Image (tube, rainbow, N blue to C red):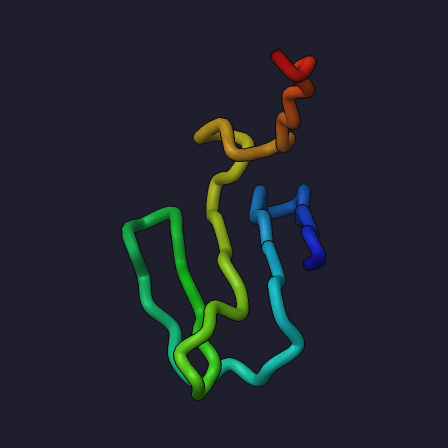
Length: 65
């Protein structure tokens, strides 16, 4: 997985696979999902990422109970 943030246009790209993209679907204005020929998820693009709170990514660490 590779995560890239483009500050100039506030776009977050999350690349999950190196497979070629054959289909792209807009989930809403901010979220676009790309699929490979086998139906697996290849990439997610989030527009206005920092504006909507998707960037910076926040990873919360919790102690095991």
